[in-house]
Amino acid sequence: MIKNMNDNIIYGLPDFLDGVVTRERYLRWLSRKARSLRKRDQKGRYFLNYTNECYKKEIHRAILDSEGRDYYTCEKLNWKKMGKYNNEQSKKAGRDYWKIFSDAPSVDHYNRNKQLVFKICSILTNDMKSHMDEREFVDRCKKVIKCQKHRKTLK
Image (cartoon, rainbow, N blue to C red):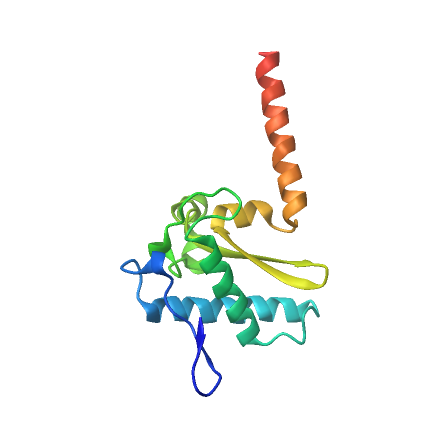
């Protein structure tokens, strides 16, 4: 991420996306994510002083930090699916459609001490995490693992 003479931020295509998607497609997805997340937050009266550009900058930073992997599982994300998820098709096809895109990149964001925190993860992980912060999500996953180990000992 660099600034040009007019102090506008220029978003470069992350190295791990070179040859995977075009810069134009990346920028379109980045802009759409920033707008939709900001709009959702503002409906809830959160982060009213954050601009679209602020969201975009922080999402881009999270993408760079991700190195193309899900923050929570470290699995590689399928960036070729970026921006291809279609809500209308999903409603018609249901789970089968959703499963096709479960490894597509998504933006998890939450409030930590009144600061926006962005993490890149799969659509599947983001769906599972839903309304939890990072600590709550990890604690929940630990409970699931503990329960599954316990069940195996009962068999």
